[in-house]
Each structure stands twice: as C-alpha cells, then as structure tokens.
Length: 383
Ligand code: ADP
Ligand code: MG
Image (cartoon, rainbow, N blue to C red; front, side, top):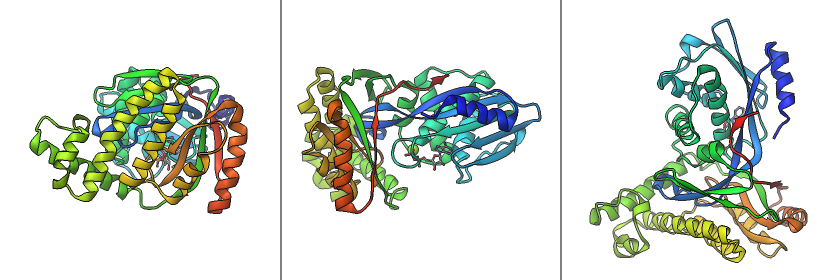
C-alpha cells in the first residue's frame, strides 16, 4: 500500500485542506472463477496492494476528483454530476456517487484524491478498490454508512449500472470484507461467508504475465451468455434450476447433448469449479496442502480447456511453477485471457520461487514478469 502520509500531503498541497483517508484493498482469487454470477462459490483474499482515497469538503459547489495514478483532475458541479459513463477513469468514483445519490443521499461539494498501487487492469481488481475506497470516503461526508456486504452490493451496482461492466459481486465483496491472514469462502447466492486462515508459513505469490489479450470485454459477455445458455437447457427439464449453482454434473451428463459444445464446456467448468471451491476451503481449513494444490491445478486446467479463458502465457506461468520447491498450488486468477497467476508457496521458499519462476517465464515467453509476494490483508477501512 502507498504511504497514507504521502497522500495526505499531496491532498493538502493540492486542495489546501487536511483530508480524511480511507483505504480499500485489491484482491486475488484463490479459486472459483466466473462462478459468482452463476450464484456459486468463490474464495478470494484481500491483498496488501490497495487504493487510498483522501477526502475533504469544499464550499464552492464543486466535486473535484484527482487521481495521482493518472495525474489528472476532473471538476464537476455538484448539481450536474454525470448520469452516465464517459469511458474515463473518473467513471468509477462518479458511478459510486451516482449510486449513493440514487439511494437518496445528497453528494456534497468535495475534493477527492485517489492513489493506488493495485496494478491497473491486471486482474487484481483495482476497479473494486477504487469503488470501495470512494464509497467509504464520499459516504463519510454524505452521512451514508453501510455494513460491508451492502456496501459491496452498492459498489457492484456502480460498476454494472454506471461504468457498464457486467461483473459479479466477488471483487467488491472481498475488498469491503477481507480479513487479515484469511481467505474468504463466499456464497454468491446469499452473500454468507466463512473465513479460512492462510497459515503463517504460506505466501501468496502473484505472478503477472504482463499480457492482457484484447479479446476481453466481448469475451466476458460471450462466456456469460454461454453459461446462461447451459443453464437454460437444464432448466427446461428441471425448472427449479435458476442458475448453474442449482445444477449438477449429472444434469450435464443427461442433457448436455442438447447444448452447443461451447455451452456444455462452460457449464462443466462452472459446476465443477463451484464444487472445487467449497472443497478447497475445506482443505485450507484442514491445512491439507496436497489437496488444495490438486484442486487449484484442476481449476486451472478447467479454466483453460473447458472455459477457454486462459492463454499461452498464463499456461506457461502455471506449468513452470509446478516443480519449483515450495509450491502448494498455482492457477490463473481473475477474469482471464492474461493477467496474473496466483501461487500458494511455502514462505521459506518464496524468494527463490519468485526468482526462478521469473527466469523460466522470461526464457519461454521473452517477457520479464512482475512477481509479487503478497499477504492476505484486512478489508476496507478508515485510516
Ligand atoms: P482490474 O479491476 O482488474 O484492475 P478493470 O479494468 O476492472 O481492471 O479496472 C481498471 C480501471 O479502473 C482503470 O483502467 C481505471 O479506469 C480505474 N482505476 C483503478 N484504479 C484507479 C486509480 N488509482 N485512479 C484512477 N482510476 C483507477
Ligand atoms: Mg475490475
């Protein structure tokens, strides 16, 4: 996380007022990919990369938003805040304000400065971090305070309805509700959750492939449509199946022949992934590292072969980790088509693991990866 004292002096220098400071972490998903919108299970952890939001009131009727990452300031009139996205980074904080306004809160004139070290667009959810940090910051001035799960839902709505990204609840939920040294098994149906401790001698090694294949945007929507198509076929026979969460591998075996080959594969990934995620939480709770690693490997190849959301670079990053000392489990994390892999690694081997994985990846792919040693961190809060 960046030093809050630095954001404080930056805000002070720009706006001439001492800010209140809030922080919201990025996240890494240990297992459970694309299962959130099928109302299944996911198991993310908040990480020590985070976004800071500094906020102070103004008296001139303006909402001024500054991002230190983009070194750019945007100014709006409080009574004419945008109601729609403009495909600009400010969509994220403005979306949060639009949702707050929709909930009946008046957005007061304010100065908001944002500064984060969550790598942007790498699958570690800088978007949820900026939304959740903004929600806490603006909420503190607007008199809006919500329990974590509600706050997460409102931030998800900002991303869905204002930014226009059709993502599930996982990212905002873990950013708002993460717990230091724990992963969180989330039931995306009712938002109930269970914490599973990450043993102190295990590190989260996050390896950035440094590629993000341009297929995304549209691919996310296509995958989602295929998942829904698989569900619709099963629902014809079992009307109580509203989401793939309600379906079983048996259902697929019986009625998969009525699906397109793509829908069948996507469905198989989602149904098996949700089961694996619950089993992985169990394995983590029992500290059964072998089983956890097996489930992560299975999850990766299901994501790669059935969901077809991996890429050569991510497959290589996972393959090259397999026989390195200390590896417990490795898989591609996040929305897919590039971004980062998550590796659970025994702490005493982590530094060497990082060096050797970087060497191997560069030798095969010709790109120097960024590899971070992270820890499960606390969710969003006021500093
Ligand atoms: P991810 O969530 O995986 O990082 P997204 O594409 O969902 O990727 O979100 C990244 C976008 O969020 C950035 O392109 C930018 O518009 C916005 N964003 C995130 N962090 C910041 C920040 N610190 N300042 C300004 N915009 C940010
Ligand atoms: Mg995002």
